[in-house]
Length: 460
Ligand SMILES: Cc1cc2nc3c(=O)[nH]c(=O)nc-3n(C[C@H](O)[C@H](O)[C@H](O)COP(=O)(O)OP(=O)(O)OC[C@H]3O[C@@H](n4cnc5c(N)ncnc54)[C@H](O)[C@@H]3O)c2cc1C
Ligand SMILES: CC1=C(CCC(=O)O)c2cc3nc(cc4[nH]c(cc5[nH]c(cc1n2)c(C)c5CCC(=O)O)c(CCC(=O)O)c4C)C(CCC(=O)O)=C3C
Image (cartoon, rainbow, N blue to C red; front, side, top):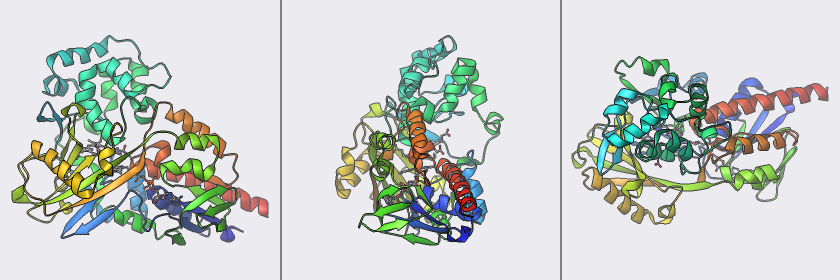
């Protein structure tokens, strides 16, 4: 009977907890237990409250144009906490100067001609090279290729290294030479297929809201005024039980084996753990191929300052071109984006270190990372002594969507269907953004619910 059915979800990040919530909404009587290896819920989501600062250690917001997470937030009654990011500009640090990202950029890719023609980010030669996109034949022929190959062939190396790479390699914690066009930016592959030239097809890349360009008073992100930890805490009220400090060691149809050897039975099992766990937990070749794919290590360093100790900067933040030779890859002025992030007359700056090509800095001590990051930040904007800092590492935990990612995921999902009652979601599969995690969780919850309903029918 349905009320006796048990579900185990592995991992208490946004993916696991959103799946629990969706499942409860569909099948309220199902008994859901979430097993979490660490001593806290949230996974990469972690909010610290200190001296009036609200410090996001992981994600800080999510894109408004992807509705899945906003819908979930409304469904769980947190809509009164939703806040838009500030409308400040994004900058790129290139050739020792902060320069505005041209208006109309989508994921760092220019989609408007005029701002592109006037930007100081690209030399006149680079602009002419970018215009050759109008003439160049198709680069994408239905076979996945790297973002570097695709964009360098279409727009030239300068647009790639000064605009596209700094933002995209940060968002996906990857190297452009490895990253899959089909998995990270399928919309650009589709545009090229339809219009051949990106410049000619650009207009259709912009959402209607972006195309009619009235001055926007808010940015393109949403967050919660309580911090994103508030989201996972609310989601955590849906499962019947969450067991912390409970790593799962292996999964079979109908049962999971814990790290301590204990075996738990369940009618359905949903894997929503960290990216490197898929191989060891499921132990079939297609799952191992995901574990063998690249991951990287990064760290965020949040610095709290008195306002008087921070030089002038009007934007939301900046990303750093790789050629600048700095350790920091980007920097956000958190309280410009989110007024609640710092108390009055204070500033919260968050910077990032560690790249796919060199993540050795992440292994250094907190004091060393703080010192290196501060020195880099000070080459760009004047800064005094911080009040305190908070360092958060993601060691070997940032999935990279390398070329043919979608094919590997398809093969994995096909193989998974052969294991009765076992399902998977998580940022490793169909997008790293929080709304993608929510959308994948919804799909997985629907699959599992359908399976459980069919199972009930057979049991009768
Ligand atoms: C610094 C940073 C900034 C980001 N910024 C943004 C942003 O602004 N916007 C955005 O949309 N996205 C952002 N992201 C991406 C987003 O945060 C992640 O993709 C998302 O949180 C991943 O959620 P998840 O639940 O799939 O995985 P995770 O959060 O990694 O959760 C997996 C959970 O599984 C647990 N686990 C692992 N192994 C086991 C096991 N064997 N047994 C039991 N439990 C296990 C882990 O302890 C963890 O709690 C950012 C990420 C980082 C790191
Ligand atoms: C890991 C990470 C870093 C650390 C970077 C590193 O380690 O180098 C970072 C930094 C930054 N990101 C910045 C700007 C943006 N990030 C975006 C979108 C996204 N970021 C993500 C993650 C990260 N972001 C993700 C998972 C998305 C896509 C969400 C989805 O797909 O659901 C978009 C929207 C793109 C578009 O849609 O056009 C913009 C404009 C800026 C600049 C100014 C500012 O501080 O805001 C900075 C410092």
